Length: 245
Image (cartoon, rainbow, N blue to C red; front, side):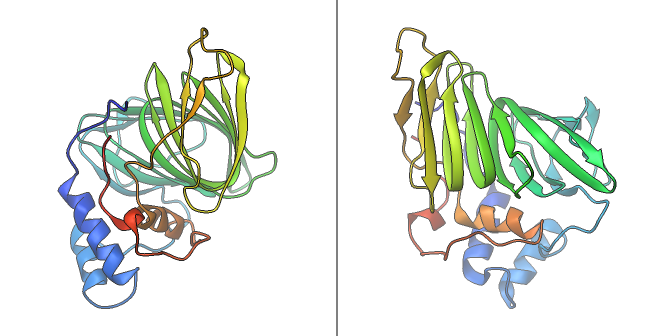
């Protein structure tokens, strides 16, 4: 059972409605996005990391602003009812409230290369471009190897919720080497819970429902790095506001 059951952010509901209606095209959707965020989404210019932030957001324990540059050696944290939408290199993220994540990587010339990401607690939607060697994601209970993938995670000390929205992910339980599998997904095909119970050898990866993220949000953060998701929006349950179970 997920512990994340706070109410939807009204701004997030507005975003989903605008994206559903306009898919970043013309008309009232563009105006609505401009009203919500100050400008319609597009690829962020070089040197800009933050697309949107609200509430208490900190980078390396310092208050973040729209001018903060985030690198693959930074720690990003959000307070209650806070959020940041940002880009680092070829990767783009939405970090929700009460979350803390650590990035580790390097700079090569003008490019940022992220090697690993650790979500200590909270909720994260992420899209990753293909990078040499892929990217390693960690939570308290899970280790995940990904490459060119869109993913959603919720992490707490007892379990990780993980959805491979599209792409390929190698998933393993930290405390149970017998619990591991490779997920190949085209469209949220196999969400999982990854537990860390040493007494449940071989049974620490379990099927989970689809919860708490939408195709429209994936489309937003792919747009910020100049890409589009590798699927056609079906107008199904994935377009609805998030559901908590």
